[in-house]
Image: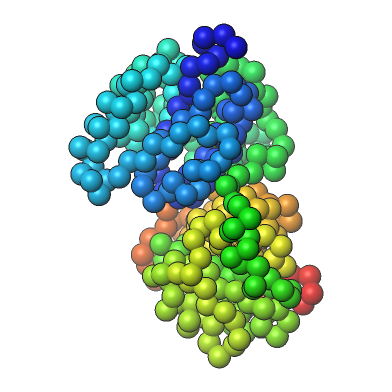
Length: 344
């Protein structure tokens, strides 16, 4: 091992949980390409559980904004400057991640042109949403891997996307925690989303659960704040509301082996991809061409069969439908969802 090969590599991703889950694939690919370089990962507090414990990640740096956003950031930058990195890969496009990159001691600093501090980078590529190549829409995983190709040119593009699904540090303990709910054929339903227009309608989820409960054990998942929604969706069925009872990795372990996982365009979708769960993904206000669709084999995307001039209405969704009709969700029927599961 030469001295340059032994220098660590830093990956920066300070976005939301779904972006961090997808970044795990990038981290694994970096490790596969440079197995002798200790891999460091910088992320925001709350997302560390999906990266800590991965065998190829040497150290996780957690930015806790609760300690004081600026003070915490500068403290971490000072600590990181004790290292000389072989390369810094910034896969986030906002100012703070660019600031971290700018201050790092590294001969190579690689990131996206859209970061306002990208003039500090030695290598940069364009991050386009949507990103279309030869008529095919690229996934975020592919956009991220452009950075590796820009750095050393050795990584072939394009490639088989399903070979680069995200990876999670799921343990036997996580699997044991959920084993009791997997004793008979089951489906997992994650009806919540931070953004209202990314969420299939509550009434549709309620009807879906009612129809599924005749043939399957239905398991509803989400955070503590989703408990009331899931209780309403559960209705009078024997579905089990697990909101707030499982952490992210336990939720992913639960999805593994499900007859089907029903999710919105949100974080649970990427958990399902990581465990290669058979996935039905509802895309309402957003579109899969943005690059955040399911990566599991056998995954199905459901969206409005009617072309809507107002769709997509934004990259991240809204708290209410800007047009007031919410056809992008209403046009996706329960029958369409039921048709994606084989036993019905």
